[in-house]
Each structure stands twice: as structure tokens, then as C-alpha cells.
Length: 240
Image: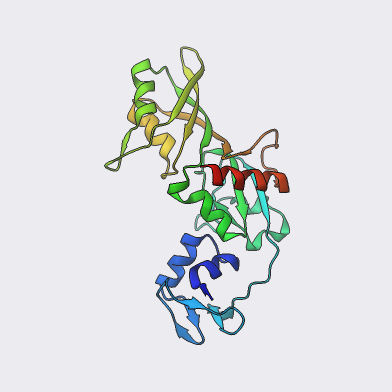
């Protein structure tokens, strides 16, 4: 027996958080009856679980890949404004994959894709505190006082961000380049942090999540993660 949300995540419907929403919204049926309780346990060998009238079965190969997202692509499969989506850059077998976290329209860099809901949940769950490393080019210069504000935490929506690692890499009269490591993933967090100290993000690129690095992957290209990278990531998760 297994909890229904864990089973659905393993069956390629999305991250644990996404499938929990599907259950709560009454979109999943168990043996013909709508189920809304996450605590329900199912027998995968004998129970019939359906989503939108289609039977859900555990029978797929786990896939893990990274993409170097360009600017002006959104991190969703469909867009009402007909903008480019990152899924247009992925291989033909991408229909069952989903992004682990997002990057906004004007940001670029590392995105992880998988069809493994448990793997995705480990990355996005707040308790795991995976470091996310960014190269950030901002307008103008920041004083040491403002750099320290970024490091110690910024109030966003009434809640202080976790302490960040901030290094000033270079600067001129018009711009500064920072390397920022954060340990959470609030919506547009980096941009809002920089705005709060009186500056503006000009360019934003994610370089790393946990032990997975973008490296020299060309812009707009993808590659499968190596088994050693996946193993290293899971090892990182156990250590933290």
C-alpha cells in the first residue's frame, strides 16, 4: 500500500506538490469515486486510479536533464499570449517531463527537468535548503551596507529571506556584477531583493542548483544528467 500522492508523483503527473493539488481539487478518482484526501492509501496492483478519465499506471523510465534557458522563454507548457516556452527547446520525449522550479521570462540559465516526482520534491521542498547560485548584473553600485542587507535577509511579503551569500565580482560606474547564493525559491526573489536595496537587475543567470552545475552547456541547449550527477545530487541531499 502507498499514499495516493506519492503514487501519482511516481507515475509522472508532476511534482509532489502538483499532484497534491490535483487530489485536493477532486480531479483524481479511485475505483470510480472522487478522492480528495491525501492520506488515502492505494494498492497499485488492484486499485484503478484515473485522472481526466485516463487510467494512471506506474510504468515509465525516469528521465533527468538540464536546459540552459534563454531569455524570453516562459517556463510553462502553454501560454495564452503565444510566447515561446522552454518545452519547445526540449527533445521529443519531453511530453511527460516538468520543470523543477522556474525562471522568469527575462532570466536565463539552469533549469532541471524530470518525470520523477519524488526527485523534484526533494529539490523544491523548503526544508532541504538546496543552494541556488546566480550571476546577477545590476544597475549602478551597491555600498557595503546594502551588500550586508542582502546577506542578512530582506523582507519580502512580510517575511524575511534566509541569509544569502553575496560576492561582488566586478563593478564600473554603470553596473555591478554579483554572485548570489540563496537557499529558497520565492517568486522573482533575486529581483525583489535587489529592488529592495535601491537597484535593478539588468541580467540574471542561474548557474547551479545543489551539486548540479550549468557548466559550458550552450544557451538554448539541453543534456541528460549523468548517473554520477544524479547520485551526487542525492548524496548532497542526505548530507544536508
